[in-house]
Image (tube, rainbow over all chains, first blue to last red; front, side, top):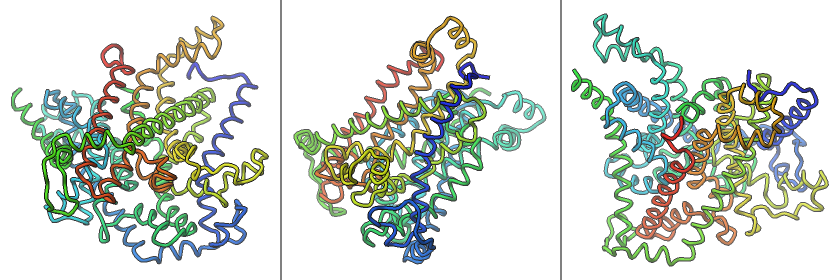
Length: 279
Length: 296
């Protein structure tokens, strides 16, 4: 129980009212996006605007999903995010383990270097990466974009996983070693299962970082590997101001991740607050 | 044994370190080097060493000075409003106790929305003629007509308006972090202060906020860095307009590199921006966080 909790009834009524007001203000924009996605094109830009559709229709969804390039972009988004999550975990988990378990000077330097990458403006890495990807022969490919997204999610993964490994008692591994496992076996069969919850959190954050990313995708892809955020942005130039289509595709793109993260919310909150609250 | 431990650790760190060296450090080095060259925008075109010429051009350009100032103002607007709102909501959650758990979840959802979606959505809410926000304000009696506030087309207020989706998107992050921090504030400290008759503002400013300082520092630094880097959320709403009133550094650099085709000048601007970020972040970390001086 926290000392800040108030038990006085009038105070609680006022606080609940304030909270309800904030939640309505906070929830309204996305609810309005969903409502607009079910409106007819004329309804969407009616003057004065109405909150509710005068006529409910799925036309925006049908039109948006049948537009050229939209379904491939959705597939690209999934593929890029999955690939980049895999890269982040494969590289970040062993590194985070080594940093927390063997406190070597090189590990400490590495943690600081990884944190500094967070401060780098995306364009300063993205612009030269265009050239790098061309040299590697992976311009405008999902793997190229996934590599670029990993530059964002890898430092984050190392940061998160370090906090999770911190919580694993050393005795656990020592017991495994006494039983004859070598270090790699102890890591693989004893430590990793213990931090499986942490792995899930880290994977979700790596996935979201790639899923929602825009500038790398803008710089590094043109047609073949284009992801959905770019297509959503193009709704306003390429096809005129198609608000109905834009809101429908945005809903298709956002609702699954919102539902997924709400379902896993306890883990997500842990991940968001970990680095900040415990030092 | 010690040495082999060290080698084992190095073997585990090496792949990640090599990856970041190849795909962050090396591109970054090339970016900074480019700042000293005049570069043709055509791939493989000529390069000419110009020393600090690009930096001189950047600093002398009103566009660069204006964008730098707007980046600072934008970051301050976002961080100040997010912190105030985020702290208020965190305190409400803390005061309501465990029964607010469901609402904490609901409050969190914008964090999962892509910035480009948030930007477009808010552009739609604020747009002239058929924007719903002005219509709702008019129905509530706060506005006489819906064209009274031109959120995104009045250059005087556009920088504030484009910050709204950013605030909507990530205030929950500040709330979550501060709420978690509030859980760690010892209950007996607050109880003791209450018994001594300390009023709430004093309690907040003299006891709670100082105790939360490390948490506040992390939240503000993380959000400050991200706000200063904001790109897609602004691009999608105004593309830097009207009259450049929302052109921040990231937009100016992108435009200089692509549309104006001057990678050398863009790199010089980006290098100044990068150094500025590192200096401000380091100073902020040392000033508010003070690692080492107390438990962070």
